[in-house]
Amino acid sequence: MQLKLEQAQYRSDHGELRSKGHDIEKSCTAVVGQFSAHTLKEQSAITLADRTDSKFLLPVRVLPRFLGALNSDYTILEESGHRVFTYENTYFDTPAWDLYLQHQNGKLNRHKFRLRRYRETDISYFEKKFKTNKDRTIKERVNSADVQSSDIIVEEDIVKPSLYVNYRRVTLWNHAANERLTLDYDLCYRRPEKTKVARLDGLLIAELKRHGNASDSLFVKTAKDHGFSPKTFSKYCTGVCLTDNGSLKNNLFKSTLIDIKKASEL
Image 1: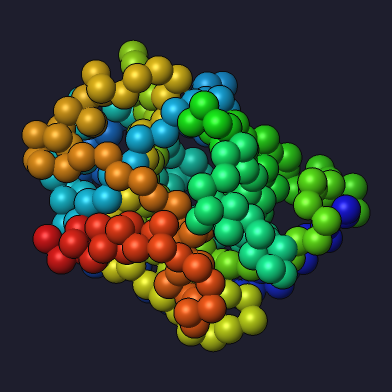
Image 2: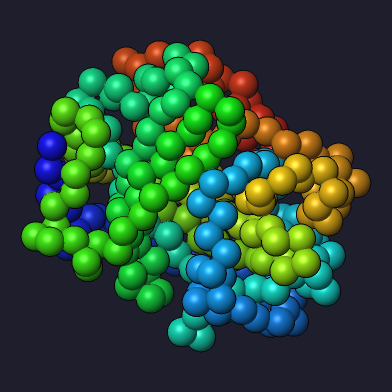
């Protein structure tokens, strides 16, 4: 089918989710400035489109400490004078939440569709993510400005905007290990037709993306030294659970919700 992207509406709706910065940023200003920088063009040359992901759920208060431990081995993404970016993700699903339920029911070879906008640079991409039965993540993206008449072909019969996921991100790159580390915090969730916002103020989500095994990663070693181990986590599925009224099955994600609560309270 063809999916029409109502980008102006999504931009307006995301703008209502965030009215101020997160307090942790005051503690990170100095250490963020100490990193050497890389550009988006340099980072894009290493796509990591077919990769393995390792995710960690951490208390947001550790962000300054972790940044300080990594600044000699990683560079930080800087674009248009910014080193911290606001991500505005609009996810799409069927009216029956089939894509969410595929994940909940453990289906392998599953898809997710989203429109991602980087607020500070006002660049948008439509992305298709495919999780294989070999635990690989394959991502395809197209600049939404290059799409004729804002129409995108997707594999599902019917999809519509299902969830807004909004957060702040710092992106680090270890050139020698060819790995990218994203540090996300201040997550806000809202369904397009609802006004209630679910926030995860106390959580930091670290995600390491690389081609090979992550056990020799400096970040992974640092995290384990502080008692943190990898966890399974989906921003989309977590947001669906947090904004649901109890109508959707969510037993697969109950342990994740407990992990989030524990990490946020550390």
